[in-house]
Amino acid sequence: MKNFVSAVLAFAVLSLSAHAATPADEAAFVATYKKALETGDAKTLEGFLYTEGAPPQIAEFFRMMVTMPIPSGSKVTSVELVTPTADEAAKLTAPKAMPDGNTYKLPLAPSKQIVITVESKDGSSSGTGTSKLPVAEKDGKFVIPVPVPEK
Image (cartoon, rainbow, N blue to C red; front, side, top):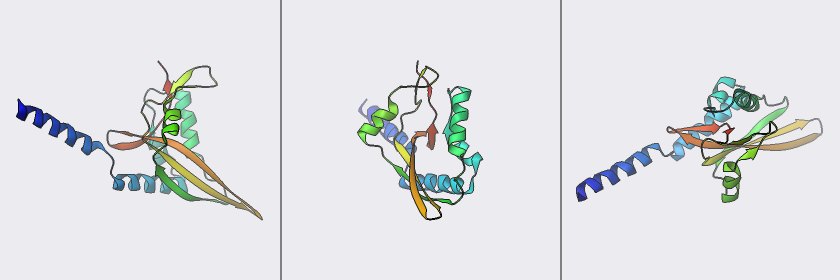
C-alpha cells in the first residue's frame, strides 16, 4: 500500500510539473505575442484567445480588441508577462456585469497578465499607453480567456 501511495504521489507531481509553464515557455509566449502585435499578425493574435463557451458577439469583440493595429507613429516598447497581485487576481476572477445586462466570468483562472506598453509620437507631443490582458494556462499553452456567461 505504501508503494502504491508513493507511486500515485510521484505521478501527480510529474503530471503537475509537466504542465506548469517554465520561464522559457513564458519567454516564447511573450516573444511570439510581441512579434504578432508588431507585424499585425491577426491570425496568431486570435490564436491566443480561449473562446470556449463564449457567446459569438463577446468572442468577436475580443478578436477585434486583440487584433487592433498599432496606430501609425506608435511602437510597442514592451510586452511583459507578470503575475497579478492578489487584488488584481481577485478582480480578474470576479464575475462582472456587462452592458447586455448579463453577468460574465473568465472560464479559466488567470495566473498571469500580459502587459503591453505602446509609445506614440506625433509632432511635438508624445505619450505612453499600457494595456493588460489576463493570461491563463490550458493544456500546457498560454491563452487569453474570453468571458463566458456566469451560471
